[in-house]
Every structure is written in structure tokens, then in C-alpha cells.
Length: 409
Image 1: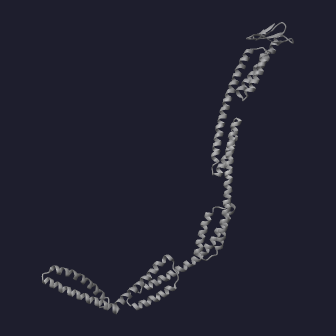
Image 2: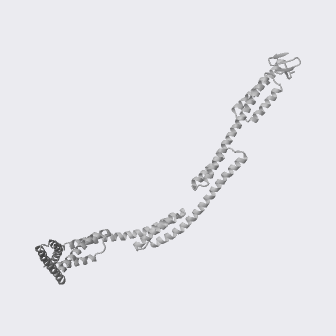
Image 3: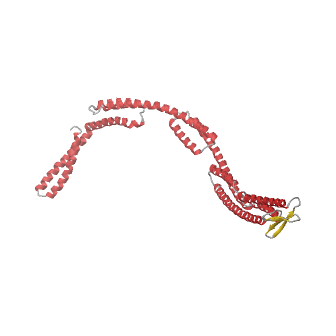
């Protein structure tokens, strides 16, 4: 008989293994010596040790599922429980039991992790839905559309939830996208209609602008072009493929008109500048008439200068008041000389002035006599009253005498 610490072979060739529950039959060995029998079943035991070691590493270092791990454990346990190996089978059972605990712990950890991931995925999808529903009301069509597409990509990268929850959230998400697309489509349809209306309006404005481009009615046409520009701005934008062409035609028609007007105005400005120079020379010539010493000669000279003045065309508007003011000043001086001469030579006016002066002089002389009489009689109050009346009459007389002097007498 042969034996070692974990097994033995009896005289009949039966091989036993020692366990905590006593010896267990491993098998029968008839082909060789008992030592060879023990060595064979010890190698079987080493195979189980290696297999358990490999499984332990797989459980610890890979993502082996709990189901597959338990199937592998059960398979090894069946071999251990069959007692077809010689060695410390109880130690193998202990290792298998610990491995089961590890798998169970890993299963719970993974379950908790999946629950956490599911919860995070739910919150993420709810956040995506909330943002999508907010974007559905946006009028920032390009930015909102790009953001919604990005949200779809984000959604696809998230784990699925339970069927009911995932379907409900997806329905809300999809509905928000559809609502945005519907609003955007309606907006651009309306925009297209507005741009088509703008195109028609601008076609009419271009036609009128082109018709006016040859006009020489400078003021009213320029005013109409300003009105057309206001109408153009109010019309809004046409489609992109039409807007630039319409604008180029519209602006080109205006450019033709305003270039022609500028050319004419440049000629007119040059002519008016020359006119101003001529009128300044005439104004200087007229100013030499003053002061008036010979009224008749002055009138004749001014009349001749004014005839030449009237023959000259317009001058620049901003220079007109100054140069015309110089001529008017000479004209007023001559008129004042005429009025003075008329007053001096008018017989009726002279007679009226002499009559008034005589009356006032008589009244003054009379009052002076009355004052002297009152003072001689000692009536000073009456004399003072008469003196005040005399002062007023004397002032009138002085004024009348001054006027009489203008008649040369």
C-alpha cells in the first residue's frame, strides 16, 4: 500500500483522498504502481488548482459576467465534489466559496453601477428634452437647428433606459424637434413670400429709377430719387439671387442722373462764380458814387450801373446777400438824398412849416407877456403855470425851426 498526506492506494488498487468528511474514493488504478496512481491523481488536483487560479484572475481583471463566472465555478465545483483528484480538496472548496462571494460582490457593484448609470442617463436625457423643448420656441433658426442636431448625437451616445421611460422621453424629444422644424419651415415660407413681394416692389422702383435717369428737371427728379430710396429701404430684402442685381440697376440709374446733374451744376457754379466777380466790381463802382454831391448825376450813374447789374446772371446763393446788400446801401443813400432835396424844395411843405413856426412864435411871445404881467402883479403861482406851458411851446418851436432850416431858410 502507498500513501501521502492527502491520499492513499490500498491493496486492491483503490485510490482514496482525505477530506474533512473522511476518506473519499477517487478511483481504481490497475495499470501501474500505487505511486504512479497517486502521482496521476495529484496531477489532476494541480490541474484544478491552475483552473481555479485562472478563473480568480479572470473574475478580478476582466469584465466576465456574473452568469459566466458562476457557470465556471459550478463546473470546477462538480469536479472537486466528484473527488477525482488527490490533494486538499477542502481548500479548493474554500477558494471556490470566496470566489462566489467575489462574484456576488461584483454583481452587486455592477448592479449599483448600472443603476447609477441609468439614473445619470435619465437625468441627461431629461436635460436634453428640456433644452430641446426650449429650443423649439427659439427664433434663432441656424443656431437652434445646429444645437438640436448636436443634441441628437448626444442622445445616441447615452445608454437606453427601461423601455417605457426611454420611449416617453424620446417622444417628447422628437416632438420638440418636429415643432421647431414646423415653425422654421413656416417662417422661411413667410420669408420667401415677403422676399418675393419685395422683389416685385423693387422691380417697379428700378423701372421708375431707370426712366428718370435721363431727366433734366433737376430739383423734382432729385427729390423723387430720395423718395424712391426711402421706398427701397421700406420694401425689405428680395431673394439673394435678385437683390444684388436689382440694387446695381437701381443705383446705376441714380448715378447716371446725378452725374449729369453734377456736370450741369459744375458749369453753373463756374458761371455763377464769374457773375459774382462781375457784380462785386459793379458794387465797388457804385460805392464810388457816395457821398452824393450831385443828385442828378448820382441817379444817372447808379441807373447805368444797375442796368449792367441786371444783365448779369445769378450768383452763388450764399454770396448773394452780401453783394446785393452793398448795392442796396448805395441805392438807399441816393433815396435819402432825394427825400432831403424834396423836403427842401417843396413849396407847400415850406409854407406849412413857416405857418406853423409863425403860430408857435406868436404863442410864445404871448405867454412871455402874460408871465411878466403875472409876476408884476405878484401872482407867482399863475406865472409858474404859464412858464410850464411856455416851456412846452418853446420845445415845439425849436423843432419847427429846425425843420424849416431843411428848406434852406
